[in-house]
Image (tube, rainbow, N blue to C red; front, side):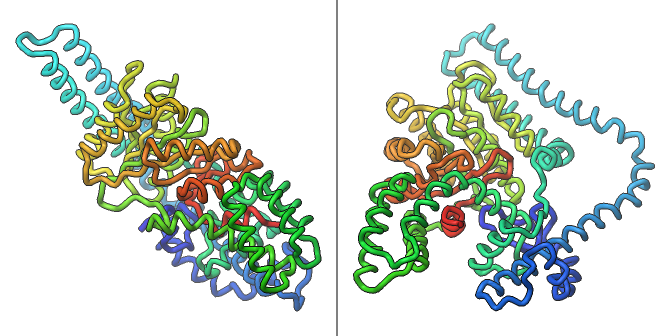
Length: 516
């Protein structure tokens, strides 16, 4: 069983890479030592030990989680050092093939490339010498059938042998493995967020702690301006109508949007008319209102989390304007799918941008995911999608990720090209679950909202992926997209690493946005 990072389900005792069953058994021993462990972890945390403050319980919970993760990490290091002794036995028997392992994988890649090259040469020879007695349509159909067979054969060879031995371990080296840091404010904040969502100590994973820390750090620029002004506005006295008016300016500056700002302030004014609200209660009420805005389109969609359906073809189209990070997001989603146990395939349908196909192939190699592409210049994107769906159906692939060329929402001919790709998908795989995800750059602010409104009309969007939160001071655009465009935020990216993309969680996002 593999931990499903789309649904965030499974034995969370695993740190993300070890199988849950293997991780749950050795953790029984550290759990028994969890009682004395907090005492050992106290010097790393706050020196105050017997404090009767209300945060003592949460701090003790965080200490237990830290001690458990630390014991788990030490146990894994011992397990990694122990198998090194019996390794010489298979190495003696396989001493001759081990030096040739690199050559074997290289020969396998060469064979795959030779299949593709031979398929291209066959097409070129057929184009140069067309068969007599066949019409142009019949010749094109025959060439497409042969090319489909070559693509299916190459896709069947590449992932089976090359991916487990070469590509999947390479992902771990490309991205830094999450490591347990000090028992600091970042860890305690991450632990409190997980505890507030009903997590138990034995359900806290190192990768979730690492992700929450990255999310909090990624929203630092937005938080510096937003939270500072917010706390200055709230002050220490009970809220007044004048304070609410100042809060309106603060929300608008963070690109929360007019509609979302009005919704929050109307609810806050109604609360002020009923009772006196102190700053702490006002901040808590503000968090509730922001979460309600973000959750409304998610609840309307009927799916709390977007995840591929097992044993069924899923096609996800990545659309958006130029430079928002569509290809990078696609590569991260492919890695997320592989680590969650899904079979995945990438369609390099961005045939316009220079080196776009090569970039997709690099991302595919990093995650061990086969890539269907047409190396010819200015190839038809719909033809690439046609070939990819055919290969996915032949192999029983569960998820097909389609990379599309960047286009402005004002170019009607390019928007029509997206509709053509969607028609190809609906015609070839009517039973497939199709999702159109708009990739938005968080740093674009209200311009991103206009993009969402335009793409929603032309491409039939079903969700939004918010990227580059780590380099933006306008993280509030998520609220504007959810309230005005009515689109659910499905994934968020807060870094450049291959693992810096996670399913969207409104509670975690708001807590990171308003963290002190």
